[in-house]
Length: 332
Image 1 (cartoon, one colour):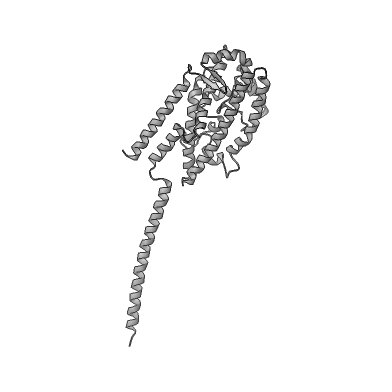
Image 2 (spheres, helix red, strand yellow; image 1 turned 90 degrees about the horizontal axis):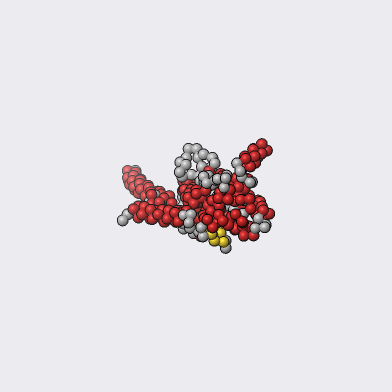
C-alpha cells in the first residue's frame, strides 16, 4: 500500500471516530456533567432549572464559544448601545448576557474570528476574520491574540462578579456557572496558544506565512465545527412562551460543548482526531515538504558547483598547455 493510500485511510478512520463521538454527545437522552453535578437526561436538567436558575439566567453559563462574545473587540457608540439594549429587552432576553449566549448559538465561529469576509481567499480554509496572520499576532507584541490575553481578565471579572451577585442564593447553580466560566477561560487561552504555536511550527518547517497560517486555520475551523455540531441543537430552539424550556436547551448545548472542549484540551489539540486528520491529510498530499525542497536545492547547487569545478579544471589544464606551448615557441 502506498503512503498516499495509507494516509487517506488514516484520515477516513479519524473522521469516522470524530463523527461517532459527536453523535454520542448530541443525543438528548445521554447525560451531561459539569463539575460535581451530573444530569442524567435533558428532562432532569429542565426540572432542576425551574428551582435553581432564577429568572432563567442562562447567560451566566458560558462555554468556549460564547465567552468570546463578551470580549470588547470594537468601538460601540452610545446610540448603538442603546439600540442593542432596547432590542435585547424587546426580544425577551433579561440581559445582554442572555442575548450574547443566544447569538453565539447561531454562528459557527465567534464574532472576532468569523465576522469579516476572507477577500480573495478560500473561505473553507481560512478563518474569515483572520485571513492575515499578522492580524492574529504581529511580531509577538500586537494582534488579536494579545488583545485576548489582556481582555480575558476583564471578561472573567465581569462574568464572575455577576454570577456571584445574581446566584448568591442558589449555591448549586452558582458553582456550576463558575465551573463553566473557569473551563471556558482555560479553553480560550489554550486555543489561543495552540494557534500561535502551530503557526510558528509550520513556519519553522519552511512554509510561507500564508501556507503556514492556512494549515493552522484549517485545524481551528475543525475545532469550531466539532463544537458547533453539539451546540446546533439550541440554534433555533427559542420559545418565548416557555422560557424554562428555552433555558434548558441553551444550558444543555453549553454543557455538551464543554465535553467537546474538554476532549480537545485533554488531547492538547494536536492529538485530537480532527486535528491529527488535518495534519495527516496535508502531509499525505505533500510528499515533498519544504524541508525536502530546500535539501533538493542544496543538492542541485552542489552538483552545479561540481560541474563548474570540472570546467575550471579543464580551463586551467588548457591554459597550462598554452603556456607551455608559448614558452616553447619563444626558444631560439
